[in-house]
Length: 308
Image (cartoon, rainbow, N blue to C red):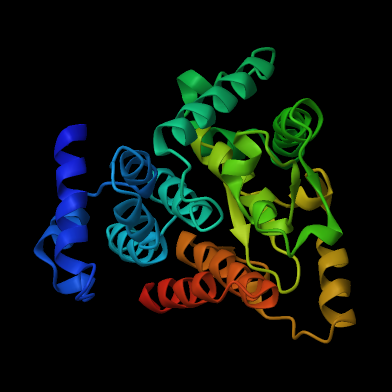
C-alpha cells in the first residue's frame, strides 16, 4: 500500500469512528486489518497527518489494532510441529507486545546475519552444515554414540561461543519483570542482552532450526530448557547458563526438589505452540505485575486464541 493511500485510510478511520467508536464494525478499519499493515508502518504515517486531534486519537488505537493484528497473524501459523518459519514469525509477533514499532524485515535480516556468522564459526568442522542441512539429522546417528556426542558438543560450543561470548547474551535472575528480557528482538537489536530461560532458548532454537540441527524445546516447569535429540543421543542444554550441558540426573533432582512429578512431558521435545503459549503466559504475568492493564488483557486474549 502506498503511503498516501495509508494516510487517506487512517483519516477515514478517524472520521468514521472518532465519535462513534465500534472499530470492528468500521469498513475502513477492517480493510486496514485485511491488508496486514503492521503498527510500525501505521505509526509512521499517523505522524504525517496535519490535525493534532486526529493524530492523538489514532495513536490511542495502538493496543486495539495490535491485538486484532496479532490475533489474525498468529492464527495463520501452524505451530503444532517444529517448523522454523512459523516459529520465527510467532516469536517476532510476541516481541511486538514489548515494542510495536519493531520491523519484521529488520528481525529477519538480523537473524540471517547471526546464522551466517555461526556458519562461519563452523567452517572448520568436518560437517558442512550449509551443504548437508537436509541430511544432517540422519548423518549424526551413523557416527556412533561417542563420536556423535563429540560432534554435537563441537557444534554446541560454536553456537554458545557466538551467542554468549561474541554477542554477550546472558541469563539474569532479576530481569523477569522487564518486558525487554522476554523479547528476542531486543537481543537482535542489541538493545538488551539480559534474558530469561525461555527467551534465550527461543533465539537458540531459531538459529538451530535454521542450521538444521536436532535441537528442541523442553517445557520444564520453572526453568525452560532445550535439548539435542537423535535416535542415539540426548543432551539437555541450558541457554540461561550459557548453553551448558545438564545431566538428566540434575533435572530429575531439580524436579524432585521443587516437588514436581517425574512426568515424561518434562523431558520430551515440545512443539512451537507450547513455547509460544508459555512466552505469552510469562508476559501476561509481567504486564499484570507492572500494572499495564491493556497489554495484560491483550496477552490473555492472544493465549485464548491459540489452539489448545
